[in-house]
Amino acid sequence: MPTFFASNLSFLRKKKGLTQAEVATALGLKRNTFSNYETTHSEPDLNTLEKIASFFDISMDELISLDLSKESLVELKGGNDEKNDDRDKKNGAVGGNVTSVVRQYQPPVDDDLPVSVVGSTLYPYRRFQAPKIVTIDSQGEENIIYVPVKARAGYMLGYGDPQFIQSLSAYRLPGYTNGTYRIFEVEGHSMFPTLQDADRVIARWADISEVRDDRVYVLVTRTQGVLIKRLINRHHEGKIIVKSDNNHAGEFPTIVMDMDEVAEIWYVVERWTRQLPGPGEIYKRLVNIEAELAMLKQKMGE
Image (tube, rainbow, N blue to C red):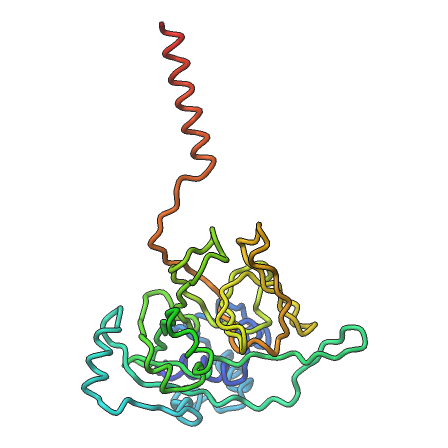
């Protein structure tokens, strides 16, 4: 199977603003099966290939043989190739093959978005499109962009700006090929003990329909900055509920946020920390019991 099939499949799905689960359901496939097509772990048979081509309204030959991304993507390179090459080698966490090529998605036109009815009010079902900007390595694979705390203000304004995204460090990490990922740095203690200040989280881009209650996400908001919080999804009512884990003293109150306030959503899948946690309470109790037993045996032996 030519290499364009997997990349075209991912591109076409994101262009339509669909999740892997949504496309898989429409095609009568399991989500893992469809995901394996996008990650080149497996290939469809002829009948399935025909269904996929028909679903995206293109020919099988176009799906297989053409790089469809070139039809609606803008590719930008830095002005100094030698400088970019040096930075790429520095930023490439795996293989040193991170490039400074930027892909800019053109948002698809969709005038038939469904609506949900709550009482007498209609709320449009807002489908979040894939991130506007991603960078790719020399093999055409998406890099993982790192957003440190000091770059958060810029990210709020520049998440759709190729030049800004290109200025951030980019990495390739093994095992992160089934979506678009970002690394965000944690600031403050609102999510303690789940997350601590200066921790880093790897997060996968998520559509609002994929947000699961009480999971940790990164929200890129239009006025309140980049938030790393636990969410409750009420998008059918036009709301998202934002919670902090460290809310015992009321320092970080729960926020009910309008969906229009949210620009991007990223699902946290992994945490990196430099701070090793202390032993848990159960472990402490076991240690105390062991100590008491040892002392009891000593007294009985006297």
